[in-house]
Image (cartoon, rainbow, N blue to C red):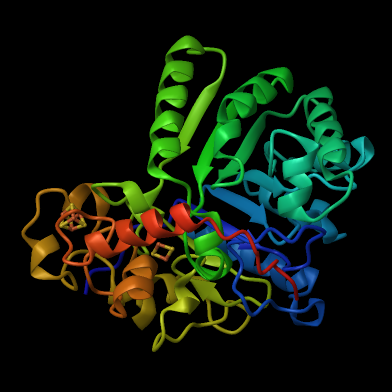
Length: 360
Ligand code: SF4
Ligand code: FES
């Protein structure tokens, strides 16, 4: 076993507390209560270990990370080690003074999630009255404080018709980047899959709108386009490959190769409050399990695309086929590929709209 190179990034989920209840939340269905969260000292110790390990960027996420009153201390600890910090926030109840304090602590970038391009859709998804107005204000504060802004728009059946409006909104908010992120179906989103999956014709229209806007707005607005797996021919390189470039730490210190890894049964996970981060990164059996190419099915092992997509997503393979080592069913070469597309076609035709909202 050769030691892996250093990871590039970490997603630090500081808390599962959140003012919103989005039915596609990437947090696990079993959310951790506040009393399971790590102390400030433990987080700072772990973040210093991450810097020692060579991590270059930390995405501070949740739930809602600004609910941690020690967020400035964590940002400052990372900034003092020259680690790039990105705050991933829902932008609720965030004053200009707090954003300025985070900037003063060394924060480099803000990513603001917006659930709909209108107040109605934002409220339908996030279940927060006045959420849209507060998000608009947060975006204004971020830019007024001189921080770069990415607008993150998670896309599904209830807002896919708003993609053009999201583009106009991102321009109006003076965002540097717009992430059109079609929902990935694990955890809460898997639970709500039938109520969220869009129709193929809407997906195709969306692709056309994004591609045209990308050309038109070159040099003005950058785009990240996370395409929908259920209508794809090939999978995405989820996490850039399992335990290859990045990992996730959840509020109680458990370290995961990806945010949904706990949905794969039979895996065990170490905790960074008890085991040194370098040891976890280099020797964790769970990290080793799907690292590299040896674990792959023959379909992937013999495929030239394996260097590009690393066989796709382990969590999606497990959710759909029951075996995490299977070829991601988003791949046209997977024997389960049709199953994925049929689920999307049926769900979007029947269009149920009763969500299980994310709740503790
Ligand atoms: Fe990727 Fe495997 Fe499909 Fe090849 S067979 S494209 S490596 S998922
Ligand atoms: Fe776990 Fe893709 S979300 S590997």
